[in-house]
Length: 397
Picture 1 (cartoon, rainbow, N blue to C red):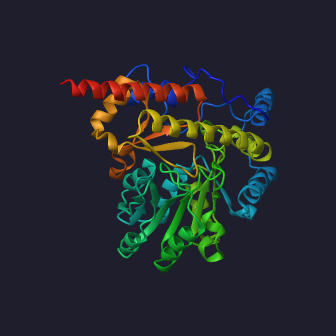
Picture 2: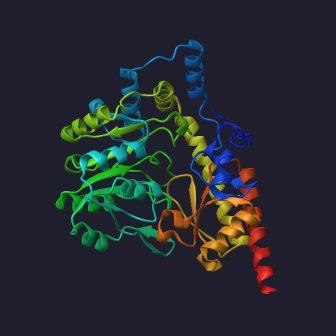
Picture 3: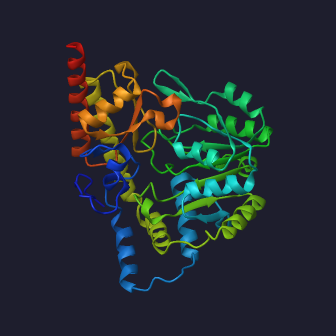
């Protein structure tokens, strides 16, 4: 496909949250935005052509999801993840987070305990609190520059009466791609305690070489009957603005409950371009994705080598998936206000600061690697210069 991922595309004045909205988030002008998780790459050409053809048609009435749409999802799961799913398992949502919110709201009661595993994508915690449920945390263990599940703590928390466990797989922000043994142990513990698992797998296609994503519900029939898998083409092919997701529910009873809730909230109607983008991306986007991840992996290598040479106190927690770099800055010995000041006011770079993902994220940064290499290089240079200047100024005080 030979896409030009080096192209520096001007995204200002395109209603871009990442570029047009960064100043409103960080209250600082002229920032290089390496924060919110969307790509600075054009989506695959076949997807753009399919959407352009639909625009040329000129009539944008209500739409339905045709057989070809469902077949594209089924085929993708089979080819990409070796997971055979049934068409009837596939449910619609305008996004993964709306689906999770809907499930929590309609499958649980106010005050029910719901578990997450921080540091984790902040909305997964927020959706629990905003739906008036009790947030329970099972923090990941961080040892030797690697994160693992703390199963001893998980067992204790599940014994407290957890209704739902929200799994982030692959894990955002730390980049873990959970292995078969880890997933099986977690799922079995949930089955023993009658806990429903919502598996957020929106990053499941974004996997580095040598790693393999395993859909939770593919492990066994018993696990599938206790799982709701949420994924989407939106992260994979840079389509978050089309607002569409696949909610895969093998359990017929749970599926009926979900569809009933979707209809009750009048969320069953799909976006015209979401349907078109989903089908065309899954049918024709594989080559683009392979090129994209190869490019992102080189960006990751650049960040790792640059920091080792110029700021060795900042260490990349080597990801196995996602296009995000989780960087351990604890050896800088900056508190969060100092780290924020250094990045925003001096470096003029906007990452996501680790505290966003829970207290376990203090002292970390998350950088978005899905950008032209020139922007990544620029961000690294600005960060390095700011840190060294800040240290020099502090020594002279």
